[in-house]
Amino acid sequence: MKKMLSILLVCCTLTFVVSACSGNANKPANEATNAPKTEVTEPAVEPAVVATDEDIVPEEGAKLIVWEGVDEKPFLEEMAKEFTAKYNIPVEYQEVGAGDQMAKVKADGPAGLGGDVMVMPHDHLGEAVAAGIVLPNDYYEEDTKANFSKIAVDALTMDGVLYGYPRNMETYLLYYNKNLVKEADLSSWDNIIKFSKTYNDVKNNKFGFMWEVNNWYYNYSFIAGNGGYTFGKGGTDPADIGINTPDAIEAMKFYQTLREALPIKAADASGDVKTELFQSGKLPINLDGIWQLGNFTQAKLGFEVGAVPMPPMPSGKSPMPFAGIKSYFVSSFSQYPNAAKLFIHFVTSQESLSKEYTMTGIIPARNGMDSDPAIQKDPRAQAFIEQFKNVEAMPAIIEMRQVWGPATAALEPIWNGGDVKQILDKAVADIKIGITQQSKE
Image 1 (cartoon, rainbow, N blue to C red):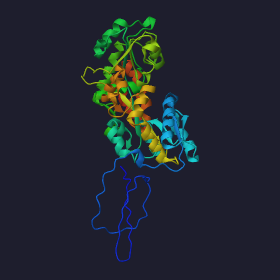
Image 2 (image 1 turned 120 degrees about the vertical axis):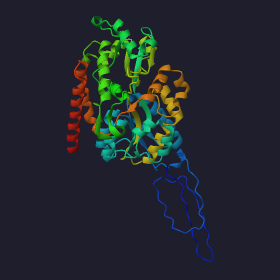
Image 3 (image 1 turned 180 degrees about the vertical axis):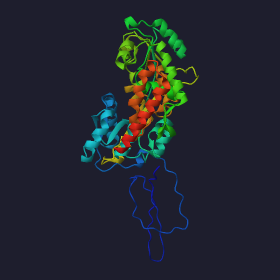
């Protein structure tokens, strides 16, 4: 944590020396002292300083623009009013989706037209750092490390530097229609297959269990849970690709067996089809993400929806879904970085995040939120918190771009009964070619 106290020594030359020291807790973190150097025989011991909102001084005349998608608009507009009332800093919300912010800040930032505060998933970090568009999380670094999930903090750290400010984690699990299936039927994959085989009615478009068969994002969970990996060294070494290890091959052979539960073409199990079937009561078990928490409710669907973490595979190991960490970032083009950091600290406090869960349904990545009364009331939210204990953050390095295409292309031939090893070996070879070509660009 940056220390905000400085010592001012004033020397008076005549017949004696008077020394005076003064700590200034309101000095900006990057302000240098102009005091002359003076030898002190017994310097005072400087006490530890804990970061508080009052320690960082916003720039004079600061005003902020915050970019985020439409779903968070009510929360951010309310937080903006509270922040402005407390600090007299105007905050403007602008609707810019996470997928658009990278390109927009590159185009608008240099002209001073971009957002000061951005909200992006952590896997954009590699590109953002390479482009120099985000500032490190320096002032609140220790505060962030102490109060947020280690998975989230590690995912936002690159080459030893913490950049983002975690807000919430996103992953997936099993939703189920309590009118059609019992939770006990979801306790193992064998039970899921058994239930599905008795429930399936392909001609009438009814299926016991469905997920996006042709989407690497969901199916990587089997590989990671069984000991495979995308990149070595915690997702940071693109020279070490682990999606075709013996453990990964075994995991994808298990994936093949799930066709017993879902006897259709991989391409037919799309996200839109799956969601429509679940909402219409034709799909009892649905593998889907936390972003559906607010949509899959009894009030909206007419039936009670439960949720459970993904059960262990036959190997005894549990699938390990990808996790994405939605995070705040301070734009490197901001004229008011101190004010931006102060705003982010304000909206990621425990009180603010509790309010955000109530308003939007996102589950914060802040430690201790599982004891929040509102979250405790929702068993489905508790199920996600349980699933968060067994997830893997998506690699944030830019080489991850080269994984999605070849890895996804491997799924359909595996689903159709192809040789898993040969297919995965080809996928890895194609990924390596893509990484080599990318490095030359």
